[in-house]
Length: 100
Image 1 (tube, rainbow, N blue to C red):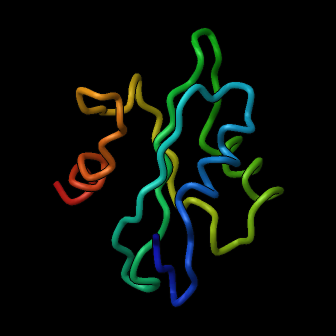
Image 2 (image 1 turned 120 degrees about the vertical axis):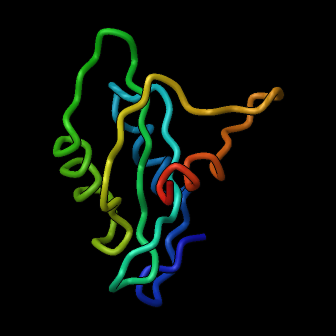
């Protein structure tokens, strides 16, 4: 759970909205530190082959589906999400890359 300025944001809820975009193959949402809100959502997205999107397109789509406080502050496009041997997304690795 991400606590953004006292509001609870559940990453899975934001991820479900992202999966609603036909261009998105995979998505992961993590909380990252923020000076004002404490934590904000950051989305990592993998696009389907041959598809293209801009971060603004993703945010515009999310604005139609989510409350303002649940919106990702940033969208990062990756070739693949980090996974462990059993296929689970390693969100701690994504969070670690933020502070590095």
